[in-house]
Length: 221
Length: 221
DNA sequence: ATAAAATATTAGGTTTGCCTAATAAATATA
DNA sequence: TATATTTATTAGGCAAACCTAATATTTTAT
Image (cartoon, rainbow over all chains, first blue to last red):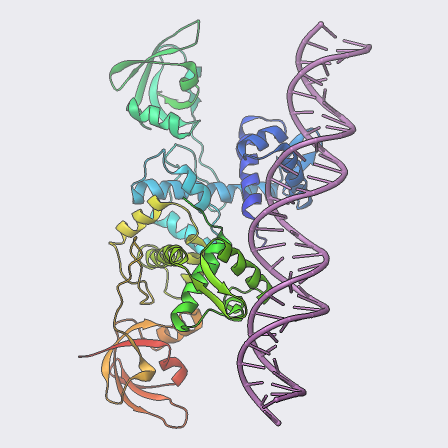
């Protein structure tokens, strides 16, 4: 059983996350930004990952996970999201407090541990931010979610996830009493700045395009 | 707030543990053995710790924790023992399975996390091996324990801890159904090899000196 | 008290993962 | 299309924490 360093795991996870958005190769600069490091360091590490057959890498193009790399990335993502869920459900953490600690906990090496946490939580399929938790074989249960900013006028449904899960954004949502499961109705969109007029918790609320484009919703059928 | 590397924390904990036994300075070779590293590496690191005022170090003599070093060592020991307790009580680990994982978990940096675990466990004062858990101020509740091998013939009481907590020893105890809280009666000691004749769980049991010298007992008053 | 053995330190390397500065390639702009 | 700008790579270094081999000190045994 091959083992990975914390740094390698962080790169794999970051590539995984970025790969979800862009469909071309993951760029050196985007990795450098996410990983809080410099482009030169990224190039170096990505080459190392390519040597280990964890990513495909083409100079000046970018990196993409191989099947092996994807599998490993998913186990890191799985651990991260299970720990986040544990912190919220069993240790009383708020959803804006879990990320940093989970960044550390995701690197703990013990199959027994993560399986026990999974069991304790009842094999959850979503973390506190609405992100899917891969099962131990790497399978994801994907919801049919859309961005609130992409919905048509008159659309109703519920908030099912956040795209940005930074503390500041989550704290904004707390302030507005928006949680996963909260119902919305989209009244109108402002042409000029693409702000949205919503009904949330029975009250009208105006949100910027930036906010709406970081909220996943599931439309009422 | 000063932060320590995983390696520094491991050295501090190791020095703490060894300091409990010997009362002179902790030797380079004993540290090297415990930390699975070479003497040269230990010398180097101990010097670094001395520069940071975490240990007193005298060449060819050994290392001793300063007050600051002791405080830090105790927080690592606290985390280690709380995690061990958590693994056993909430995740169904056996007492011989917890050490390796706790070695990793003890380095997670989050005051909030360890306080939440402590609270969840009900502020325990002992870990699954009977070792005391420092409270968040570093205070230890010390039992009046003695080694079984040091007891007089006729002594009765209960097992309250293990000195060696290696899986092999713990598995031996499991096999013999010896747990913390088990009552013992010391019948006799063999002159030749210092083996002991005991009554354990209502049945006679002969244990070697090595075993008896790794069991802590509390004598019935 | 001296020699031998054991223990500890120093000197000089290695690896991992990061950095800055210089160069090369790709993309955008005139 | 040629040039400017942005993005990426290479070259050369650095710090942490290891290592081996050589040397120094302390302890043990004769």
